[in-house]
Length: 394
Image (cartoon, rainbow, N blue to C red; front, top):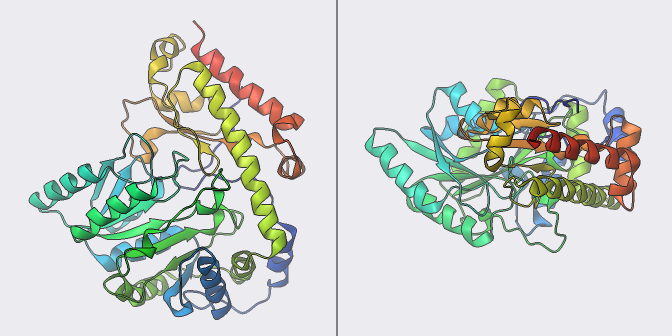
C-alpha cells in the first residue's frame, strides 16, 4: 500500500474534512475586513467565552486571547512564565518545540499505562525533584485532556491528581483541550482542571481539532482572573504582539462563528465525531488482530500502536525501528517525534487519511449513516489491514 503523508509531525493530525459551507461563506465575506487586534477582537473573544460557558467553565472576554494557532500561545506563555517545560512522554511534538525555540529545557515524564496526555503523578514529582536538584527550573506543565498522539482520554480523577501534584510543587498547568469535542462516547463527561484549580491553569484550545480546518490556523487561550496564572495574560499578549502573532481577519471571523456553534455546525461536528469514532475503532480492530498493543481510541482520529510484540516478523521485512515502520503505513508518524523511546516500535496513525482522496469523497464519508460501508472508506481500511498483514507475514 502506498503511504499517505501525515504532514509535518509538528502539526496536529488533520481531521481530513472540508470546511463547513457556513464557515466558508463567513471566511469569504470577511476578505476585506479590518485587521484583527492582538488577541482578537471583542466578537471572537465573546464567542470563545460562550463556548467555554456551555462546557461549564465561566469566562470573561478580557481574559481570552486569540492567536494564529496554539504554538504562538504556548511560546508566549512559556516565555512569560520563565523556567522550563514539563511534558508527558509521549506528547504532541509541538509542545517541546516551543521550549527549544526559547532555549529552555524540556523534562519529559512517562505517562501511565491506562492513557496518554498526562504524566504519571509519582513520576512527575520525582522528575521535578531531580530537575531542581540538578539546577533546572521546571515551571510549566502541559497536560492534554484528550490526547494527541494516543487518542486516549485521561480519567478525571487521574487528571486531578496530576494537576494537584503540579500545583503543590509550584508548577503552573497549561491544559490542552483541543480534542475535548471529539470524544467518541457521546455520554462521556470531560472536566477541565481549570474548574478546580483556580488561578493555576491556562486553557489552550486549537480550533483545528474540531471547529476549523487546519489551513485556517486559530487557537484561543483562557486565563483565570486569579493569580498566579491570571497575571500572565498581559505579558502573553505583549509577547504575541512582539511576534505579530495575529490571525488573518477572515480566519478570526470564521472562528467567531465556529465558537458560537449554531445548530448546523453542531450537527456537522457530531457527524464528524461519529465518522472519527467508527473509522478509528475499525483501524484499532485491525491492529489488535495482528497482536500489536494499542489503547482503544477514545477521542480524535488517531491511534498509537506498539508493534514490539511483532518485532521478529517485522525484522524479516527489514523493519526494525519506528522510522522504517512509519514509512510503510498510511498516515503514520514515528514515535520519537513525540518524545518516545527510539528503541520502541510505536507510531501515530492518523485514521482520517482513510476518508477519501477528494473533498467530495470525504464529504460523502462525513454524511454517511454507516461510514464503514462507504466504498472509499471500506477500500482504505482493507488496504490498511493488508499493509499490516504484509508487514508481519512470515
